[in-house]
Length: 443
Image 1 (cartoon, one colour):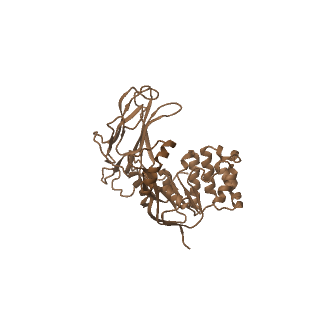
Image 2: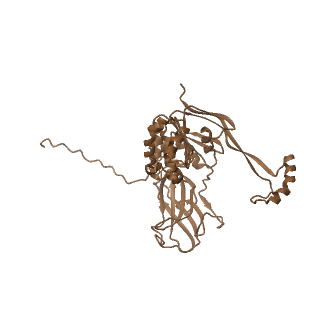
């Protein structure tokens, strides 16, 4: 008996889009008189094959082939528009492929959008039975799992309320509970867990882990690299509708994070109107330098690293909070540094207008080997809410390496150090103490 759950064979999906030709006006509705006057011209253009509209074929997926074995948890990652959701919709039979085929060995449960398959006028109870029937479950099978589904979704008080009155969080909790508890052999999950709070996301990841341990197959689309790393035993990177990489989770995530990123060590915006930010703050530059102020993109573990963020403060009266965040190749945030503790304008003191520079100095013998990524955020420090003025994730990267020589932390230790993002060098002493003779006369 084959152990395959899915076989994708040269799968492609195209869409035909239309847009106006050069010079054609768009964005304005015509009057009835204008339409009637233009009718003869439009008919003649249609006969000649030119109706003022150009058509273009867009390939959402292009010649994808791969196999998934039963019990595998495959993480699918990629930028927006890479084809991730299109692939899951084809596997869910929501849309048909243009070319190729997908062979599915088992029953599929899918959660592609919040409340997929729910009828807004029906209650939560009715939608559980309706959605279960759509998934191919018998009524007694749904009834057996009903209490567990409701408890997982935490909507006991509202189970007999029409779901049109549910919040987005209640919607996604119930939708995920139905998809995860109706025992599909294959579970497809798109990036919908971001709607739920942190506790529910943790519960969902735990449930998907349980599904995988039961020998069922999970396809998990997410932009959370931490969730991909914790849950999946294999990852596939899609780019422009094609498979760019398919293999170990760590290497695939690192390839994804490095996509399109130039390790130049510096980004500068000379035009203030085009710089990231708003009417309060605009970013001028962000860079990584060595201890001498020289822009660098690679360091030895013993070298200090400086991260500099320059920004214009354009409006008075804002107590600002600047954060610099360092993450590893797994997408895990290692640490973030805030400048509201040491600066003269700390806590609730507004910063006057002008050009500022926030500098974070990371000492040598602190970071581990590998590729590291820098993000930043500039907010208003307020007691109730935190308005964000400028933020960008993974805008710069730099590498840290360790030479194996007696002067380094590694010394002659040639084995893998581990995946920790930091590897500080502490002062450690070793003493040889004299051997104490046992007291033979002791009771």
